[in-house]
Length: 405
Image 1 (cartoon, helix red, strand yellow):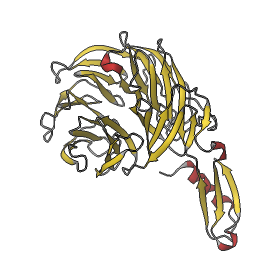
Image 2 (cartoon, one colour; image 1 turned 90 degrees about the vertical axis):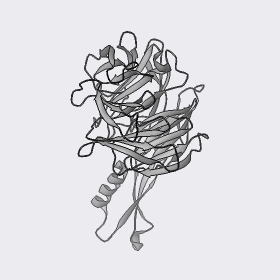
Image 3 (cartoon, one colour; image 1 turned 60 degrees about the vertical axis):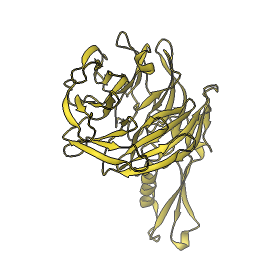
Image 4 (cartoon, helix red, strand yellow; image 1 turned 45 degrees about the vertical axis):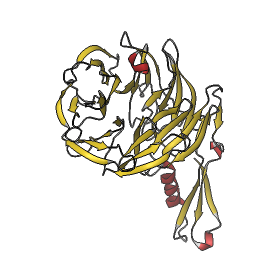
């Protein structure tokens, strides 16, 4: 993916290079990003999967999906994940909220001519094999239900996986309007929360083919809902919701938010939106993919409030605190240089993996005992420059210009 900095350097070269200079090259010195003082950047693990789009932690293994392959890592040592395999899948985008029971893995492609759900055998972490492909199905994501014996699609599909090598479309959990339905979450066995403009709490405990609607709720502005999580398997007083406003440019009062909802009343109790900035203050002015929350996860200790790690594309990872009232505030951040964070996952109580569309996996440590004062993640971002030098021998040692970016 061509970055803004590379594109800007090319424009400057075309505009100002002397005619006597036949060629010119741009070299860039880059920092890893900017972080608050309670967040430490550890390293980046490149992912050979095309655009990295999402992941799922199951036991000691992390399954990372991408646009052309999926990877499996052993994360027993969270700061040094061990790659087990990279499995090509062809072009497959977006496969965001992948799900697995450790034996089979669900990948979907809604961008193809007909859309499909792929079922992979991942019992051998070093050599996964494709079991089946179910065509003509266009849900944005699929979620395992009842231990992956069933799969619920985000736009209503119910797939029978009791024989994983022979999946079949078995029914529908509801009628979903166009441009709605981006995820569902099984918060406990058979209890499912949909990420739809009207959220639905479904009870599939007795009959997965005919789930009952227990409760519904929505927002006053009928905003797009993209994903949700309900801590403590549906026992927490809050469930957490993410809205999305992709490709929106600058941040506004309509940008995609992270929300805390009162679970009993099915009503929003608090929300957080990212703002515009100057990059050096920890917030870019805008980003190509827009000012929006993306895939997030609550801290393992979350109990009627607590910590969230949420992706925000060019704004990176935002560490947020949900108060007992449901109000949400920022308590830390990591913003990558030339990156775009699509998802974040707590691997341990103090280690977060940030899935970056362009870079792979940024490994971060969070120390909640430290105040969230801004601190650069080696060296200061203000020192990041693009240096343009000419390649022709007569000009090779000359610097045409340096651009702070």
